[in-house]
Length: 425
Image (cartoon, rainbow, N blue to C red; front, side, top):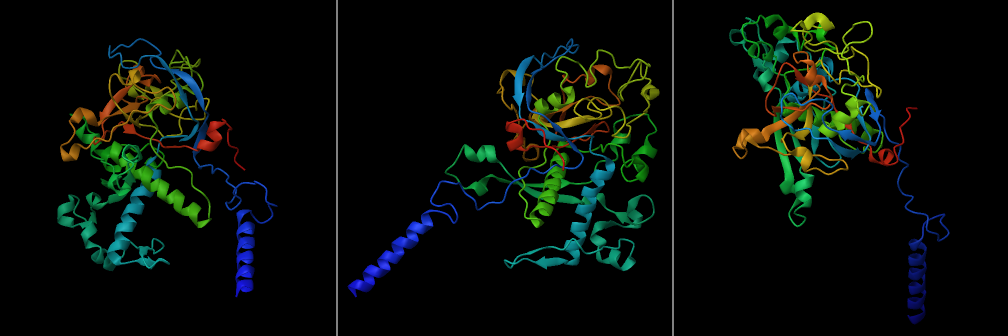
């Protein structure tokens, strides 16, 4: 018995000793070799904005006297940014997903997961013209007598996107509390408010553009408008899940999430490396040598069409700045992640600064001014001052306008730390 015990003990020690190393390492410190090599993905439709520092703040006279853009130096990590504003066609991909997911839920189209749970089967084709199917999905439709047009149509108010975010900043301040306490549920309307074209312009005949702008294919490449800050967040979450889901199928790592840019990132990207210039193309003029306007805005004394667009123009019009970004000034103003406070610049960090606030207006906890979010770039209805890359403005996060859109950013930390511009292969 003693000999057997000694033999077993020796074998156990041998196994333990061999387990301390790694196959093929010869007992040397070679690092964890169990993970696949990482190659950063390159999102289609985005351009890389390199890491760097710049003088952020007013490039010209503060004609409004707000004194809310004092000059200071900031340092930013590089990131990807959409080369253009999100278009109607791109946003419709989101609303179509929401529409189809609700329909599949009603129809009971689910797949079984290996762990016994279920997920929606989005591969099922839905023939929206089938009268029998329309009867099954009656809860999603407005009856003909209620639609205003005398025909049955989808009820846009039923297209709601449900998602959950994690308040990481709040959780790290209370490490001993349950992480689930900082899960925040959201329920947002997905469909843009197309009535903004009529409601925001009194004594103007804008019904034709209100009725066609979002859904008609002639406006495919025009920037989506009528989208609140909250809806832009919902879009970013959906885009992240779509991106992550496809990469997981290929067993590929997803490093980051799509999100709105901070106002510091937006200004750095808009400048395109021209740190002392007032506009993305340089300046100081808003026309080129041929007398052509360089952005879509309100030129002269209100001659909106002088720059080539009476309202908005396609997202790929006008020349890109030196980073490859188009319409950073003009066309539509753009939502940023940042909360608007007049003294923001006096209280921020100088490396990757970001001043945000999760306002909760619907619960009565926050006053309306706490829901203000920074918008940048100016729009088709603004004078040239708002086209300056340093000009700050704001809008309330639950408000939709006919002149505010957005674009997304995506951060890959590893290449940005060494400022290596990724190369698409």
